[in-house]
Image (cartoon, rainbow, N blue to C red; front, side):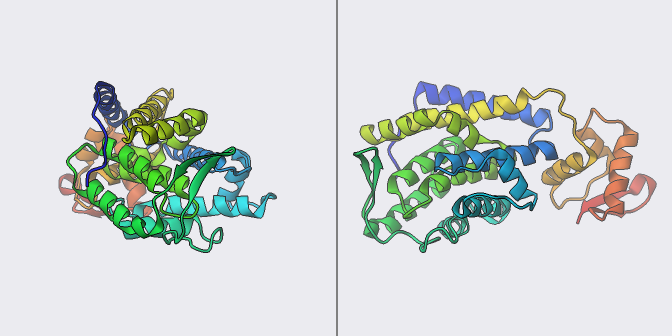
Length: 318
């Protein structure tokens, strides 16, 4: 059954603005941002998503863990960060449309933190804010059919991916399939769904913007609960997505290194052969000599293979 929500004028306006910004991102070669920016945004995303759940480690401590340096802090908090790093590093191997993949990701994210990591909860739960019960989740015997329905919607419905990613995030939070880690999984899985359609979302710190507007995040979840449909939450999350793209485009003097260009071009040509001319056409701001140096570097470092000579030269990524 299709989850209930409405396509409002605000939703349509936000979708149009997001589509426009994605076009600008692609034109500026930012669909795979520069290496340093990717690292920085990934750390910010991990920090924000875990801070929402009460993790006390700072950006500096998380950076140190990413760099395999020793950090002093609560064991649970350090393990949460290590697990989050592991699952984000594993994103390329996860299938956003697979329930098994979803459970596998939860297993990595919550490993060593709960006994039932990767498995649906076996008891009833409620969400408490202060002294008030704000949400009673569906009973455990309903979880598998509800999640199967949600993944069927995600896989088969004709609505735009931008909208379906928000719907999935809300519905998963409502179902609350795990005993713990549901918030983290909702934010992670929306990122994965978006990344599958638009690679730039892998490295956008959507979680950071959610953290900055945490009160509104929970408010939109509550309003959607009360209305019986996810429309308010969809509008909120589309605003966050748009803001994340605007932040990326507002970065001044973004200069791509040869590694950045080669990595970006690989995501475009994938396993097809290409010529220097095609490589240069994609990066109009560089000279022919720079393009030649990029490709020479890639061949020498066994990133690509070279076939032919002079005018017949072609390349393919390994």
